[in-house]
Amino acid sequence: MTVLRTPRGGASDRGVPDATVARLPLYLRALTELSDQGVATCSSQDLSSAAGVNPAKLRKDLSYLGSYGTRGVGYEVEYLRYQIAREIGQTQEWAVVLVGVGNLGQALSNYQGFTPRGIHVAALVDADPARVGTTVAGLTVSAMADLPAVVAERGISIGIIATPAEAAQDVADALVAAGVTSILNFAPVVLDVPDNVDVRKVDLSIELQILAYHEQRKAGSSLDPVLEVQV
Image 1: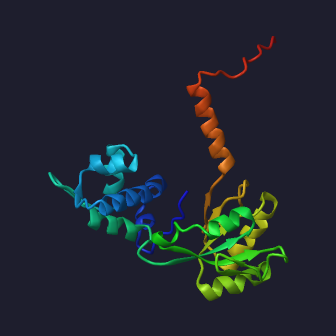
Image 2: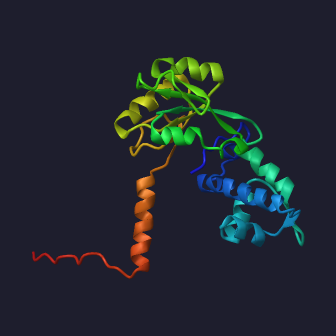
Image 3: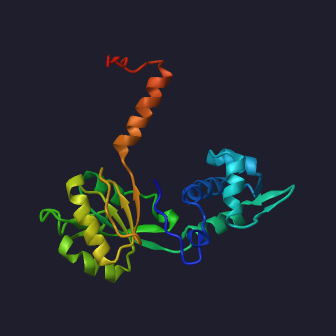
């Protein structure tokens, strides 16, 4: 799951569907890989195959952004890569605050994949006094009481929640009160936030359950038979 913030005048302001916005990072990653391979131009078929998306869907998605392809030639990889990066805010830096520095929070703090995408974890916050003041991934963990100051000082608009479910709503409320307007939630709970706050949810247990379903189908297993009830 990828954090998305589009700059003013970006895709979301032009009415681009959320499903399209969610696929733009896939195209960007595919274009980056093609660029690294020295590919200068690619067809919609090439790009859709690299991104794992239907070609017609890819062409429809890109049509929302403008006309970047040339008939008979395809897409210029570097140019299209820049345009998509600009649309999803990756031509500028986004500071992120991560709340909850347990096992998951520490893993996210040390993840190296954010930086190439213009995103960096700028601050860590935790409610546990034993963690406050410790250093994780080169950052000193701050207390929850310091969250408003941390957000203001670092110009943060994106927050990550990596706390237990029972604490997530209180953390979301604190983030919103501090001025955060986008939240990536790893806690297995639905958050109640104002309409102007964007929330993306990552539930690893649900993703694994979906995979278990597909494994069951591949194995030819069937669910327990449904009991017929006489009425």
